[in-house]
Length: 311
Image 1 (cartoon, one colour):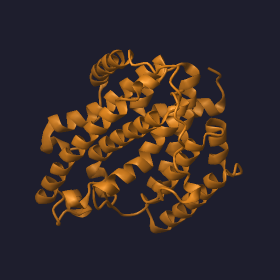
Image 2 (tube, rainbow, N blue to C red; image 1 turned 135 degrees about the horizontal axis):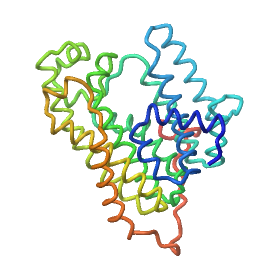
Image 3 (tube, one colour; image 1 turned 180 degrees about the vertical axis):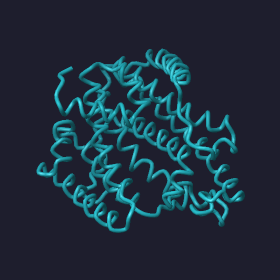
């Protein structure tokens, strides 16, 4: 692995903000780890553009900047620094560029108050901010290029995002955001009621968290179907990373509603070791399902958002 300022910064960003991915990333080949870290840094930049602004003026500026990024990605305008970095990673992969544009466009919806109406909006949001990342990450991991592989990568991203939403309900409510669908909640549930400790609102939100984590389990199962399409080291790293994330959700349920509202759960060293063992078992389970080299790859491209699809 070549040590450069760009590589070092990306690895530091991953270590600081992506603890589960950093832990699992040690299993990757050095060059692959750097590519993944650099992609993570791009995604983190977009996430911060949406999350960090608090005041109305700052949010207005963030909307403008994210809108400019969406346009720059659509045009592949390398005068924009994010696009220039993406060009070095994504090259001419139309699927990945579509995913990056959709990621930036979905991040725009995170600025300011957030409400999700129903299951359909929930899945669209999770796919926009995380399924897209899974799709881009598949390329960084040298996954086999097929329609099934891309669908599995997106499903795994959605599963991890559902886990994130479940973990951050209180923190999001304090930022005037509720990602749990209204259709799952009692009418009186508002971000303010959750943040203030309203018992009825929190009881309703807890039931929705349980439902959300059921959806996450189903998406993990779908995502794991694509593991066999990864090279061995990448397969092991993703098996471990996904079990680390899955453990967050399972521990949330095990700890129950009272402890849930005391603060977000983090996986300690012991939990990481256990999740790694589970990931290793999953790796061994899936390793026999290697793609047949004689089977033609499916090259059906995802809809290109520049032509108005999936918008």
